[in-house]
Length: 109
Image (cartoon, rainbow, N blue to C red):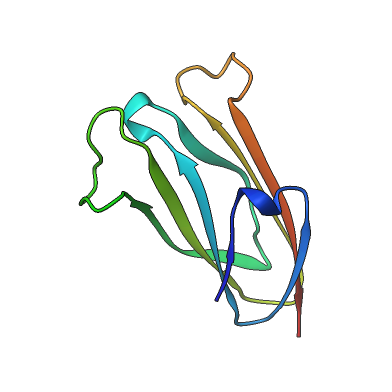
């Protein structure tokens, strides 16, 4: 499994069909800041798992405590898988995002 995080922003990664990528991005859901997909990689990729990881605690985290959002994304067919996310509060849609993350995944046979 290939693990990617903020350091991969703007990059292109190549993986074969069947491989799983673990995308890990820091967020603070207790203050409302969540990563939301603008593009989820379909149809070349699909999200297999989506969960929140906290430092030594069972989710949900304590108020104010940050966490890491983890997605396990499987390459299901050859093609291009664009992942694009924005960080923000869903109810503040008129404000610019607090962050963004984009990565391109080339899925090969």
